[in-house]
Amino acid sequence: MEQFTGLGKVIVATDPDKIRLDMTVKNILAYKPLLARIFKEVVSECRDMNYDEIEACIEGDVLVSKVYVDSGLTNAGERIDGLNTEAYLNEEGLDRYDIRTYLRLPGKGDSEYIKLIINLEAQNEDKPGYDLPLRALFYCCRMISAQQGVEFTTDSDDPVKYGNIKKVYSIWLCTGAAQTRANSIEVYKIDRSFLFGSNSDDPKYDILNAIIIYISKNHDHENAENEMIRMLTDLFDKRINGAEKVMKLKSVYGLKITREVESEVKGLCTYADAIENEALLKGLKALVHSLKVYVSDFDELYTVVTKNEEYEKVSRETVMKYYNETTVNS
Image (tube, rainbow, N blue to C red; front, side, top):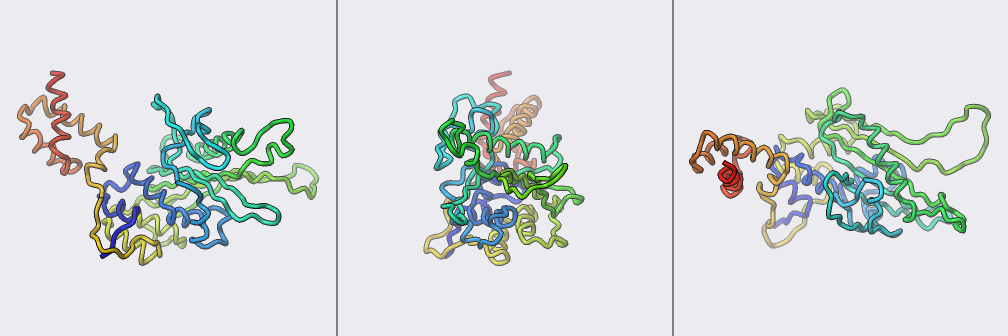
């Protein structure tokens, strides 16, 4: 009997229409074997490595929605050898990186290792109302400036100072891109040119990389020659159910999803977990409040609510909570 690993459970348990729910997407993308495939494609230092080697270089836990973007908070609890964070009581309005991790790669020459700090963001829209490349570059800048006092110092007795700044990658995955941008990968990075003359110096300046991966909102990857794009397109294709996604990732793309065990698949998350999504709950609350004006009987109201495709599996307890709110407020 096969038992699904963490990624397999999340995919199978996720309703195809809810695959883009925020935390579900983040938890899937934080799965190290999946990250290894993304890193091999877009992180230049990983191009000549195999997936197992890359995965072995992803050190520690992959942090999901735990590291703050906001100035003064990114370093909370961090130390030079990790990415630990502390919680804040008043978190409203604070931005967090969707996924933060780092790679510790074998060094070249006298270097013991190379450390890369990586941020991965999941984005439904490719045109969210602001310039996405600028936000990606801003995240890169924050990851660099936040290294002061963690990775490097400006102390007068430090012989290296800024030389210890670690290279950063901010990778943005757009799962609903228009066809004009679909099946493409954009890279923004620092380059050097001469306005006049030239020299043979080789300074360290390649420390910032913003990358945007565009996945077709039509789930069309027929013309995509890139295997990672095809894999991600299938992963976010809501026409494919969870079990089919798991088997396709395993058989077509070679992702290690299952292992042989004797017990049945247990612990799968339910629709109740998915509906905790803030937007869905907000919509449900508004619907119940509106219906209560015209339908006073709870059983009748619950029947009307569950006829809505969006909330057909919502529990009576959840609807009752909002029903009682309207009773108190009326």
